[in-house]
Amino acid sequence: MVNSIIQANYGDGKTNIVKYLKLYFELHSELRVEMLYCRANPDQTDLCLFLLQHLQFALLEKIEGEIIRLKATDNYDYTVLVSDFDDDFAAIKEYTAKLFDTSTDTETLRELLYMGTGRLYSKGVFSKYGLQQLTDFNRREVLVLFLNILASAGIYVLFAIDELEKIRDKSPKRMAHFFTSYRELIDLFSKIRGHYLISCITKGVEINLLSPPFYSRVEPDIVVLQPLTSKEGITELVKLIAELNE
Image 1 (cartoon, rainbow, N blue to C red):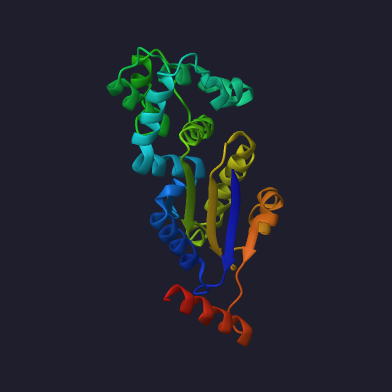
Image 2 (image 1 turned 90 degrees about the vertical axis):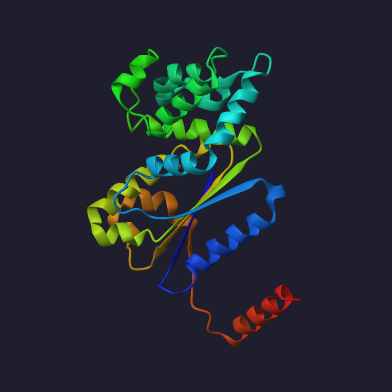
């Protein structure tokens, strides 16, 4: 998985970039890229939970369909989706086994997926299936699992999160917490087979001060947009618009 952070002043085109990308992938469905555009939620500062919620809204049926397809494949080894249950992935071993159990019917599978996204979270619903209750921390590995399931179907997700500065506007501590969860996800990128995360934020948010560990990981991924002021730049823009409009 890869990451980009688009940083610019208000009105300099951050939202335009991601909206045009969304339009592009809508026009080119053959690429099988699912672009999920959303604005940052100041009340949800755990990035992994935030992305799981949007996968649930937009792609749960495709995740479910791919699990059913994989279960019908002879001797399919689902451990490849979860790093052979190394390290923290061990915490979701029983949950993953239940997902891929051939005796799990469609209704149960849907309920299990909701337990993974956090829509169902009570201890009782996990006890119903003899499973250890998943914590919010475990859902980082669940996110990896779901994204790898989509990748096995040849479906790739481009997450675009706009207006991250809204979190900072509510509280710098919330922004720092969000960056911590962002860093934890980046540390799992090598386990994820494809997919892309783009986030947009204003220049006024000093990432390096709010979270130095996060900044050290994302500094190469930051793309700073400058206002278009040169004659050459404006000329190029006019040419591109002319080509676009034939």
